[in-house]
Image (cartoon, rainbow, N blue to C red; front, side, top):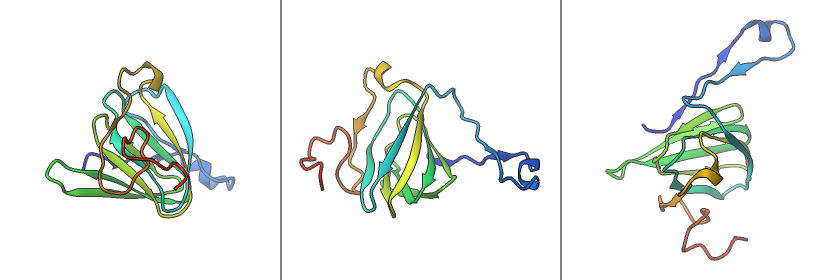
Length: 141
């Protein structure tokens, strides 16, 4: 599997003191940009890959499935919900399907505006609506 969940570390004292908990994630490369996204139930984000940066998703609300398709056509997926972090290496086609409305913060290892080609559309067969999808006509649907 090319996409993966990143497991956090936790200083258990942050739980035992009764105030909640602090969970720490370590990216493979430095993060230089982040974005907050809202995705509506039944909609997708993705159907593309990023040739110049890795991407991390931190889910802050809701439930989703992140899907990639291997070169042989085999689909692989990760279920994600609040508190999960998903790592997507550069060059890996991906799409995220909203089971419920969900929110996430995406972290990039290169600034979008510094990329010659930040995104390449690739239809993985999970719907339409990707940024840059030449066949997507109705942004309201």
